[in-house]
Image (tube, rainbow over all chains, first blue to last red; front, side):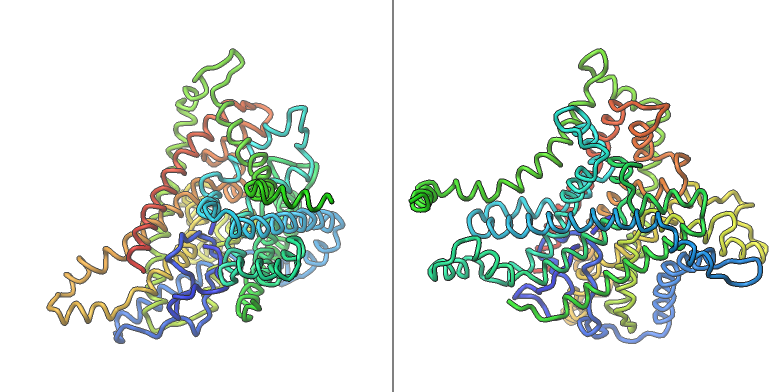
Length: 302
Length: 288
């Protein structure tokens, strides 16, 4: 739902306090826009006591709105006849099917990361080098999840891949293919930002003059430039795949159960386990957000 | 020998190298994006008797028409409420005395989380035996006595606001941060009143990103399925839920109708994203 992807390297003309560069088409992935506190400008308004209270109420309201449902999960998963119990946590994590389904999601996630990031990095590099006219089109892809939501894509894919030449419905291959297309915008944003900083054409020409083939140039010269973009793109893709429900429901269903499908099914017969898993999902999203901040704070190697 | 030949081939036909390098991405996009959409559009005009617009006529049946209107209303409400709350929060964070980067991290987590876990979080909070419901009951304000239910439209709106509000905050923050209150001093020193400043400077600058953000929020809610499906199964009357049951259900399996509904949905979403693109162009002009 998406989503302005994150910008590790501010554009050269960027104002010091900007979190994301609004001069470019902003693609609304929220994960990105975690501005470090020192980048938020100092208060510009004169202090006003009445206003101050309303401002505090509004911010407190947001914090409560976002945290109260989490308390609901915590309470439900620890509720016992007399006080608090953690037995559901132990039971949920010792259920072997949990590891199967989480494993399925991780497999899908890692394959998606590998394919999406390789494809995006290489295509962007190639477009920078040989076909700059293509960049606006690639940029437009970033808005794709809003025009073609998971329901639409799943509906189309299930019809393409359930007739004989390509019987992929129900297999993880189809799911990974779908995830690759859906996560392109995440990878595009992250990697495009790192490529902007590097002078791709000059670097490639220099490498070629020194006798390097294009494959070696790509791996030894270009990849190190975009490494931070690749890592943050990978984190965004992983976070997406671990939470994706609709495509998994449409394309694989019961034949390749993913983690979100497991959470949903558990709810009907073991609701406590299901809330434990929901908490796990919240914590893992939090972890990804935190890692993104860590990765982007590190100065770019390029 | 072969390498010299192949190199000369690249030099003679430079477009060949360009095309070969772009081919993997193109094949992937054609197979997993363009072809599915084409099949969906073609399939929407097909019935067992051959080509017809019968599927589109079927989408006008009361059941599907109602779900279309219902989805539209819910998306508009969450876009408006989330948009106003998110903009106000962005303004407070950018100009007010409170600075908090951990609040921004919390907002980005909430805007990205969603789906099945969020639905269960809401059920355990404001469901029939949710903890907030029970507290309200003890105080004597039982929301379920007033006809409220988390599995209905109001419950869904409250659930969607969980990610819409923080998403709007994150979308508006850059625009609000670029906005300098020093401009007001400049306008005032040129003799403008406060309302004149907002009329001629403030609102024209902040309105385009706000409308664009709300258009994205609208699209975000309109195409969402997972949260609603986990919240109430088939009970909610939403277009995405209808499509789910038309393609995955046993009793009302009807892919042609699902395709037609999906095409109509895509048209609405395309309009919303076009609004975003137009406002974004204006925003860029102002913000440069």
